[in-house]
Length: 257
Length: 327
Image 1 (cartoon, each protein chain N blue to C red):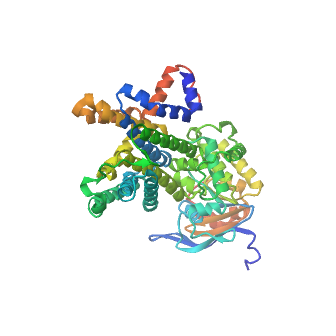
Image 2 (cartoon, each protein chain N blue to C red):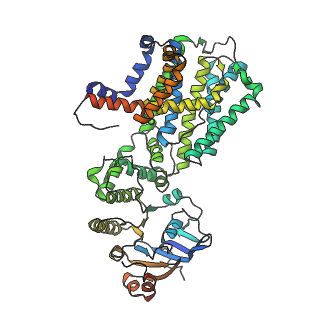
Image 3 (cartoon, rainbow over the protein chains, first blue to last red):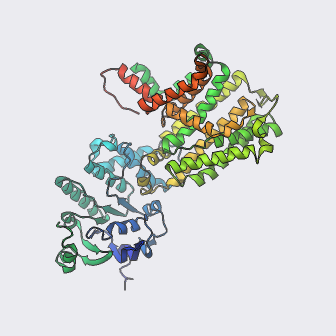
């Protein structure tokens, strides 16, 4: 039955389960993410959102189940191999290279995309020109053009996130995974981030977003999956999910937003 | 002053080469002598290679004496059993050192931080004690590998005195040039990213393990060349070449000079040897104590080592002028 839709699905998690000791963090989770969509994962604290994200990026091996990305099974791959397939992750706390300038921060993934996982280019200097101008373009895209030669550690938290986004984009991924992209941001920063993500998505980027802020989720998502206690309890468009009694029940007393 | 610094920034390699090559003329003014200059060059090369590992990737190896020592023994054995020509001896020694580094690097680099340091230390001690016991027949055991009346030569030219100095200086200048090229290359950028944020790097599609091994092997090649040159300079292999204290001295030199700056560890090596051989004379028995105090003062007040100190002095000298671009 899924044969005809297989080319449409970019990321397919099939019956993914994960136990931590006695705790069942994920229980037979099925998640299909389609090309060129923004797919949000929501759910109360401890629902297994981050675990699922970590399974997808190769940080955690599931107890059973499979993950297929772009028709390639990913379970035995290490994080860098998964990234080379075109899946980039934006961490919850900005993961950047703090002691380096912004341009160098972005040159690194650009090199990784040009050279693959390893290359012993020890004496090369020439190729850096084109890499640097590409890095500059990517920084301009996320709105950091003015601080290209600043060290990354001096950026504000919001700008660090933008930088991390630039790092992920510089690898020209097929899909972006974002773990709470607006956590700890002021309102205007959140709004800027929504606009930025929308802009990136409109050029044909597939995204999976884990997010607490429902304003962000409803503003961006085409599809929403709701996780509670390790299982997906609802899935659909924002309007379908909003009215679903199971979702309301799962959130009751958990949090207000 | 600014003019001097701008020249340093524009032609670092030329300035470096000039300082090194004129050493036989200016070094005696400050109490140095020819043989010491050669020894400084050798240790500087050792420390320079070490900086590619410690300075760039942040991995602190406490077993770098392994490659220095193994290569020194290989050189000594080649002299003893093959010929006094240095070219085949050095080639064999560097190959042996490199092979050792591939194996040891593969086994130790899976760990990071203190575990990596301890593992490399353990490997070093293992080799040191087996050189004394198991392989005592080859290495001469406690007495070291003695090569009586040996004068190594290159294509018939005897390697001693000024010839040896200029040969070593040429190797050091070449080594410095290569290290700078690595530092400016994409490969070097990724090594520095390992120190900055290894996890991010893995999630950026980089096979960090291979880059770490690359840095480890390159630094071991420097160590092997240095170890081999040491035996050419002084045809004798002491067991202390493999000992942890050799690795420890290397770390001290790097920290004193300024980790990650390439020139820093070279300055650190020069300072240590100069202190040990020249300044220790007026200081007498207490020279080690003074050296320890200097080391502590540097770690406390100048965490970036001598190179940090030079930067501070420079900033004081030019006064109110803006910092300009650093690095």
